Picture 1 (cartoon, rainbow over the protein chains, first blue to last red):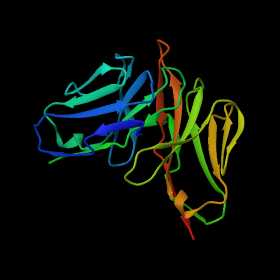
Picture 2 (cartoon, each protein chain N blue to C red):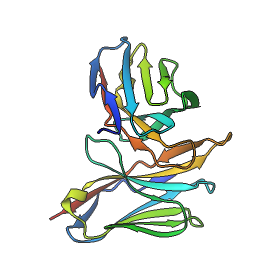
Picture 3 (tube, chains in turn orange, yellow):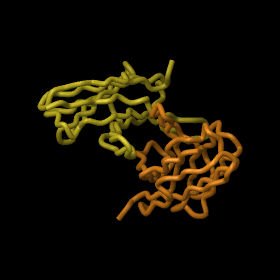
Picture 4 (cartoon, chains in turn orange, cyan):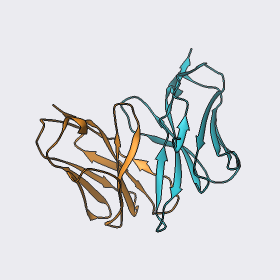
Length: 113
Length: 114
């Protein structure tokens, strides 16, 4: 059983397109996150949701819009894709908002050409 | 100053040796500390968490925390070639409103050679 899953695993698209990435966790956790890992491997948080409520919204362009239909799912929609959006996007979850460990999904490698 | 700093490496150790990975952090209010292992092309995998000063051992791994010095380390005993990966230090920092944020270091690349 995969604890945190993401689809798709790879995404290749052209500049200007709109794309979505989906994430699901079956750990029963309340909190989910989106991270971006760039080419230098630096992992940085983008968004955090707790029980469907947006908690953390880092300095991310408005072209990125997360949505959490329920606490087990967190999606990321990206409008008007740019070359600089090319990265690996990881979904993660944790039991709650406290100082808990986070568990990561397998990642979605996005390539914008 | 970066919030979480790690030496990027590569740290090269022979098989069977002890690998020592270090991490410093800037926010004294940090409460919890984690080590993740990331193989090339894979996602970060949690290997250790530590919340109080001192040592915490789990198999071949020992995490050490010194809050006064704002320093956390990971020791890997009897290093194996399969331990070759990038090790990410992560620090949970409290934010206003009671919410927390996990801040990652840039990672240390470990290479264990036979």
